[in-house]
Length: 328
Image (cartoon, rainbow, N blue to C red; front, side, top):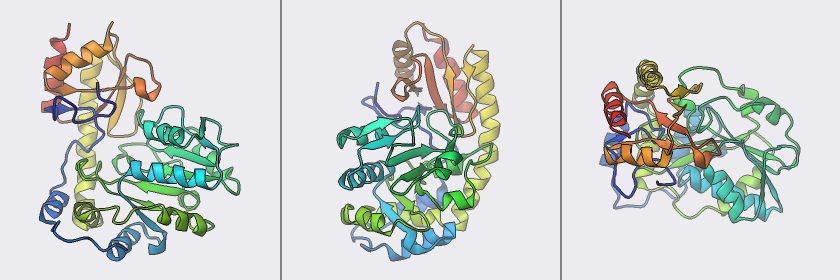
């Protein structure tokens, strides 16, 4: 099985539940913008217009916006910058995206789950893989000491279907916010991200991060996607997709329950389920052979019998049901 969800050595799954992309996507406005982008020219190396648009979307100063080739690229860059500054410890959520730990390992930083002694803290809300609030996140922010930096991965914030964020505006201004809109727009094949720096006290670190950044981290197609993300048309499409996803989620969880699977609580457009089978890798391989892919959660430090799945259309759900009936 592949380490990540999505395309694997068998190609693109016909019914791909394994990523956390918006099941209503792709957003037609963003897709059109990407398709019309002219890749025969470099984008502006300073991304001045793009930074201004992103800043206006979030109501912050343009100087707080940093660009990144992807969320993963920034994870590695932030970790490298922390190591260069003399950091030696990184705090991770108990269950989290593997690149947080892999980046720490690549720079020989110790990964722990206690925020107090760490120089770099990673958080994600709604979390992956569980889609839940991160326990104690507000207390983490309130307890930040000089020299500590907290990065909040906002990948699934636009796809929140219920619940409330743990951080208010004042606390958000104290953390680094990492945004990767390709998931919300259903365009995971376009890699581009941006970061909102804390409101104050990090100018030196922001300069260091900029110096660690390669030239043109975001290509023409990524720029087109991020520009579209800032448009009213894309934001309206996203808002209209959320009630559809809520309806689909209720149906999908009901289907899983009918199969004897135990669905875990989730605030996002994906959820985890306990599936009691004797050989989970074999069962997932049998599903994959029928064009259906789920995400095995062993890499997230969850038990072997737990899978993660995004919310998909009723047609896709019915294909999951048919495929599961053939698993033996």
